[in-house]
Image 1 (tube, one colour):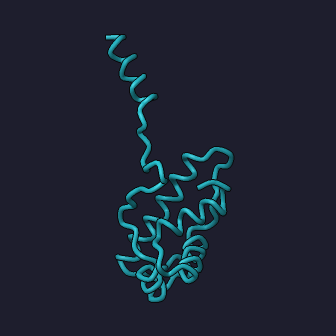
Image 2 (cartoon, rainbow, N blue to C red; image 1 turned 90 degrees about the horizontal axis):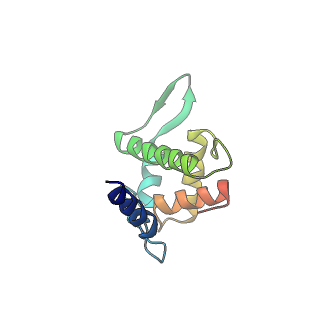
Image 3 (cartoon, helix red, strand yellow; image 1 turned 30 degrees about the vertical axis):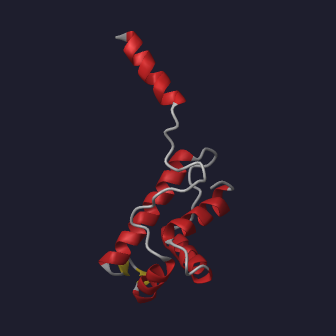
Length: 121
């Protein structure tokens, strides 16, 4: 049994089990184009008045996607407890980035903000 566990550990360590190709390409699920994100962002009421924030369910999915991405970066990049500011500030940053890069998508925006906040991709 110890040999099986040891062999499995060696295979896990040695095998290329990363989530992207050698060229750094991966499939980003649920990542809308920036133009779609900006359209939803324009219709959302994100200014906090008390605790009320109004947006569509579809845009809520995007906010959740961004929050999940941020959480994963905080979990996997050593150095700081939190690399990001307030969620709504980061959503505004992504919207600004998307205005400058409308042909790209939300995953590209999140890679850009990750690089800006952590110095890494």
